[in-house]
Image (cartoon, rainbow, N blue to C red; front, top):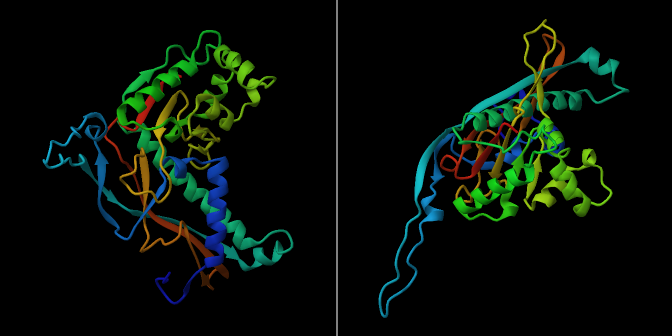
Length: 320
């Protein structure tokens, strides 16, 4: 990685630490990187294929006539536009602070944790906004899951899984459920789930069910329970905690893996411009003698996009 000036140093050690930190946070707190896996490109902006349902719905004539040519088909793709934007933050590690806390923690690593938490939260909010503004069809659940005696969340979700499978022919293991924390807690307390638990996980307490267990119960690949929250008030105003993924709205989505080709079915991708961000994130440092500090910088160049036609890879459950 070439820094933009001789005074700026690319910090491979801190970048590796930042990537490790990102993976840990993705597994326990933020879900954006799993919902919109990274796709690397050396172009800052360009076009990407938007898959159409004709590829999965219209049967082709595969029969070859005697001594005849094979029938030919072409994939049906729309075209979307991506334009990577840079996000980044800096943290001055003051000389006096470094010496004061030298025996307690590593100042630069502490700075990277804070910087990356902010970058991850910003990317999480962009991915959540991508879905909330995606124009997906709202499908109301049969009964709100807070009505534990009569709600049927397993039926509501099964309908969504079948709908996705019918649209694009994916296996259940390619489907993930994005379910906000409050909805997850209500779902596992319903009578229908409790009855299912008696036979699936005998002796288990509903409140202690893990997302992996619910995924196994639903026979899908993943259950993602976002925990991201931010203070939505202005500086100096009493704190107001706001969930990044809005409660009452769940999504069944087709998930792919990081670095899969864009032709691989998946609801969303994060386009990473590798010419400027060969790692995610890039971590650098430089000296600022005016404030007697080593400044740590974390930055990334990305765009977050939806890949399929509206409703092709996403099933939206509302009023949960």
